[in-house]
Image: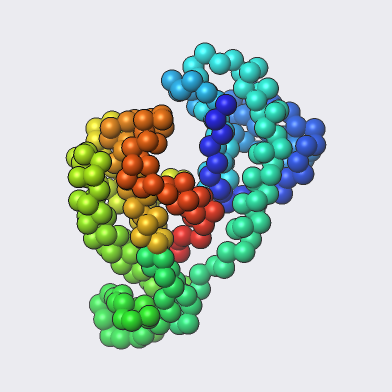
Length: 269
């Protein structure tokens, strides 16, 4: 069995190994894993894969991917066996996310960009719309004076997101050109998205989607995700051939993948 591990936001604190069972709400067909008083919903997805995979996404949702012919009974048996793993991972992401500081968007706050931390400096200027600029180690945001506290915060956040997305588009264009030649495959289209649960994806039509929040990560992490998706243009799976191609371009991809797994929850505003 393959177990996919991606860390998630969740407000559940699980005591592992306690009376785990799987039930179905017959009214709405939702499935649940229950441990004492904690009722954790999970999604079952049938695919043509050969193994059963369990994924905990960044929203704290549990997804089970199973082959078409695997029975519900077999799936429940797997969930019983992986109860400790599910509980442990949910606890880990709960602890990690409890340490995340909520962005206040005030001067002096630190924000990441391409793996480095920059000091945020808010300036009030008579401008029609907010403007963002980077100078040395300072990330300047210029906004109109007289805004309410909530409007001010929202305008700063929106301006920063727009700026991050624009910068990421530039980075992606350069990196796609570089690595397409090395993978010997180029996408038909690249789209920058605001994705909550994934960093990148590749469609059967040859289109690649990338999460703009990656622009906050170090460049080598961005390169790993881009190469990962480019390799999917040749192998639409995670076979040995796929990972072999990834490794031929990014020899230390496992270390970069681990970094993203452990630190990805910190990317975002």
